[in-house]
Amino acid sequence: MSATTDRIHLHRCASRAPDPAEPPTDHDPLDLRPASVFEAITRQMVESLTEDLREIKSRLNSLIFMTIGAILLEIVSRMMAA
Image 1 (cartoon, rainbow, N blue to C red):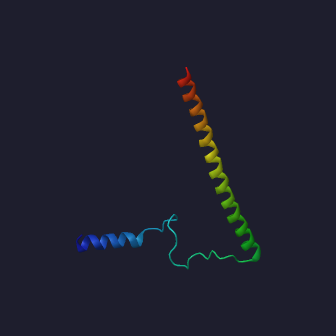
Image 2: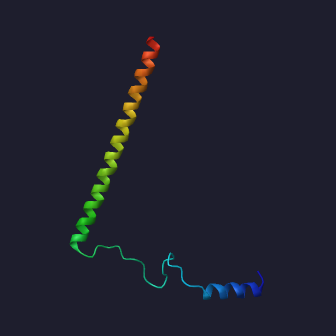
């Protein structure tokens, strides 16, 4: 880019209104540490629940695949017997 183009670009960037979708850059990052004992216990309970749900999902997926496999095996065995 030329010097004139650079100046125009800088002027446009400086004069535009801030985009509400952009995060503000003039403050400290968000502090995610628990502020109270209740919040710490609640966060621990939610994390435990998340792990439990992940395990249930894994077991359910295994059960679904086993059921589909049994159905396919039954279909193939009936086709071979006929």
